[in-house]
Image (cartoon, rainbow, N blue to C red; front, top):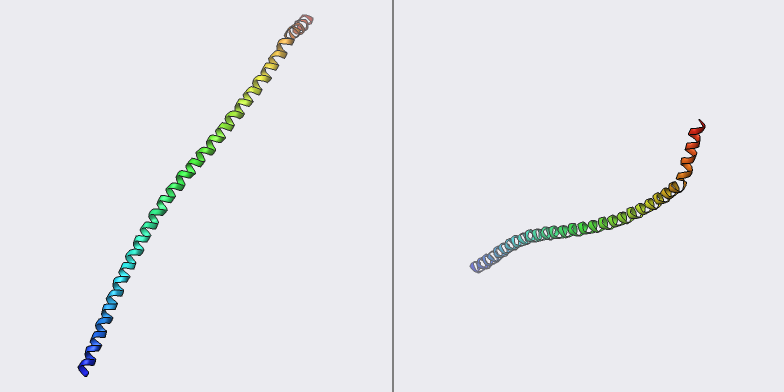
Length: 111
């Protein structure tokens, strides 16, 4: 019976050794999977970061273009108002030019 008990103990030890080897193998596979997941996650992060940069750049360009269009419109409006005021001023000068010349001449002649 002793040899039968020994053989059962040996069988159990072998089974435990096999289980331990299987656990080590599984631990190795889990470790590899963690590395692969980490690499995949970093790759996805890089891809998403690039997409976000592209989106931000496009949004910034749209904002800049809108601001530029508004500034161009405003500057055209200011130029138009300036030209209108200049034209009015020129008209007033032209309308009163003869009178101003007469006033200057009479002032110079009186002196």
